Image 1 (cartoon, one colour):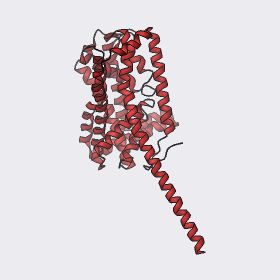
Image 2 (image 1 turned 180 degrees about the horizontal axis):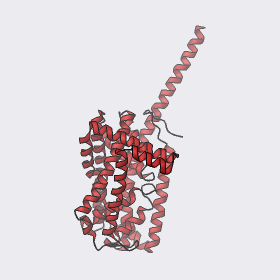
Image 3 (image 1 turned 135 degrees about the horizontal axis):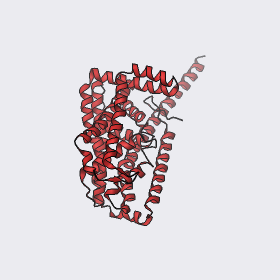
Image 4 (image 1 turned 180 degrees about the vertical axis):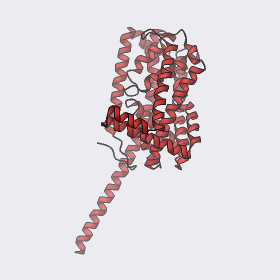
Length: 368
């Protein structure tokens, strides 16, 4: 059963707990598969000892930059709509959003968590929906631009000669495919969102009017509405929020390099960052919570040419811990604290209301 809150929105704690279990199980399956591939359980476990604790601070710092950068993006996007939410609350909402996104397939839980945080901290539901879609727009736009920009400025050249063991694919070629594929998907989504009438007609003729088609069309229509709002009130905010995404996404891309340095490996900054941009593209639409299970296989495949096989398990585990697990712990704690506080507040209000009704009933009887 969903947990009611003072915001009027409902988040299901049971579904959140299920997401945590699914995330943990999928991650475990991924690591088991990785152990089976490496065939060196003892060597893999000993690899953890090579991580230098001094690099824990930079890794935690990058995780925090992700939350603070995401909070700044939200704070900027709320300004044109006249919503005055404090920056600290935007940071908390950003961490909670990232946590629930990691715990749901393809990050689908991030949207409801962001809506909940925005409404709870003073936004109206309508404005929160607009901010939510604007945030999705600038995220997709930034990632597609980052991929094309990195490709245009020769980032693929920095990983030429690196061959991935999966299907013996050249890393530079795979990066180009990922950038083109991700950019194409984003371009289609944004094109449909900017002018939804023609896509609506095509979708109805080709796919009919089933529930999934209606949900997709409703999504595009709401995205179109958000773009119209910001087109009239906040074009500058959209541009600035897109640029600010350098902070949260940049922190995620650099995380792999920091962890690699923690293991004493200097593989070249741009080499590692480019590989992690590609890895982020590959994981973005994965159907498992936070790409769990898949990430534990893809990450070592992408990074295998830069480190000995004995470090693949340790590197992947430490990278996933600082990239996802820390965010789940921090953001999840914020989310559960909000739910608990709102639940207690609602329970107190219901108790007070019941007490008032009881008093009115007694007074009515005494009058008679």
